[in-house]
Image (cartoon, rainbow, N blue to C red; front, side):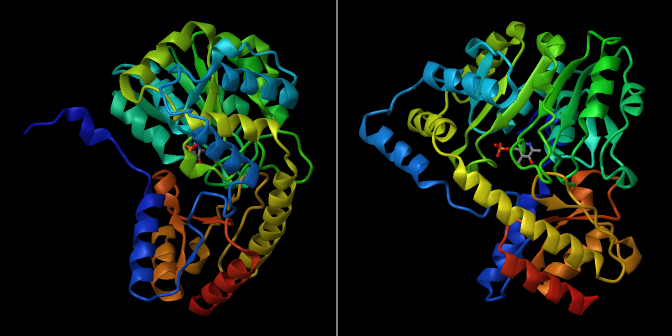
Length: 386
Ligand code: PLP
């Protein structure tokens, strides 16, 4: 057998490797507190589950249009209007099995040998992996700890040249919880006027997980970009629906047929019943989201203060998502060693920083998608091994 060369360039997501290691230790009888996981530790709200069950009973069993049902695309369009006041024709909305396929399709659409794609580092590992897979050159946009993992618009703009095809932004950010300020995005958008050939992929999957009463600085606020902007969001993190595999994205009018063709060539469409449940999520009560955010906020305070009180650990205060990305270099350990020691000696699963970029050797990612009590316990256990 001889498989295609580009496969050797395809990376992976280490969080799944850590999960497997943690599960193995658990199966051997060890108690493991999982702070490696990137999904809300809440159940999908009942009214959404009920809508999904009813949809199956009502016979929503068949294929749907590859870009999603008209009802759900209309629902997403209304949702965007409600959230950001933006008028988005539902013909530009694309429903996919999770946020990831839209990201994959966008990178596949713009990447090829001889081109460059800019992505955030530290960042979600799939960006770099798929960029490399396409043969394009992956250009890291470094987010610095000193700026609480935001970026400087001028620095980002300085990475653009005539080979640049796509700029990937993720806000709020995985793995750091960094929230890029609207002022900085304003500056970036202003600067992008000089580069009309560069498309933008804005990954806004954590758009509803923002702290301190701040507003989501969405790219939907810049209609001047709409003919080259892809915004990706979804149900996974907001509604605790990671395993349902449901995401939405908005595409320039000129690309929607192309991305739909990608769906037809791969998975055909998203499960019909899930799309009914997805609409119920958008249009149903949202009080559970307030409860979830209240819990995340308390845990954020606990984990940031707890980590900063440990010797050798410097922890940022995340503005969004449910992650912190502390620097552990003053413990004398690299992020990799620290995460390994936490897993095997303290029974706490974390993700080493290098899973989010080669430059992140001093860091680890803590997820606070676990109970307050478990986070307290985990901090105690880590304290003991330091
Ligand atoms: N984008 C970012 C930044 C993420 O962290 C994740 C999931 O962890 C995704 C996209 C993928 O989301 P989904 O599970 O909906 O595919």
